[in-house]
Length: 337
Image (cartoon, rainbow, N blue to C red):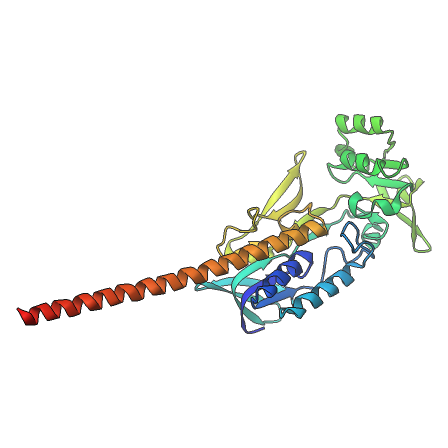
């Protein structure tokens, strides 16, 4: 910190570490700043990451950090509080007052989930309260799964989870969520719907056993599915004029994202973004691939910048030499005259 780097990467998950590895291997000076609160930290294991299935998310991060550092990159634990442009570079400031100067910045801060305010949901999140069937569905196959209709995706979720188990139940919770088309889809799938608001989850011996309705009735379940609203972690970008974009489904906001093109460029030249902060549906491997792409693009941009700077210097020198030669020739002609 308090130094200059080719690239500062904000966020130390799969996207940020993948980009850092690619850049460090190109002999770029790279600093990764990680706030230490990954979205998937509550989960004991990750899935659908080729060759790393059942690995702890924190272990994956530790392995990634080690790999970045093996190529000369630097990883620091720090929360970024702001970024501002200084000339043709950027100053990245952390919450504890440290400053790093960077020629380019890559944002890979990911998402933060806003869970429904139902007792027990936050406490069991990532364990037996789940949201992604691709991430954790296989682990609860053939078990009793309850889907809380706290967003517009209950019907869609039921179709996916029904492929993994025939013991799926939708808990209406909010009457406005189940429109006639969704109700028809659930009927076709053979998924029952339970009316009434959910009061909380039932846990026995540190194991989820049921869903308690406000009526007092308890329905047995082995896992609960919710669809939290996912918000992009991008508040520190305000000084650069970068904000988030809302993603709507069925007339409701389900997530926010940082806008970037397919190569990771944002609206601010020199600032890139990758991973789930720009694509909320991206899983770990997709985020890692996104980070690699952005890292390669940043490196190419730095290479091109260096070439253009040298060409400009060469052209300026050539023009200066031409003017000097013309001046000497003019002076010689004057003397001869």
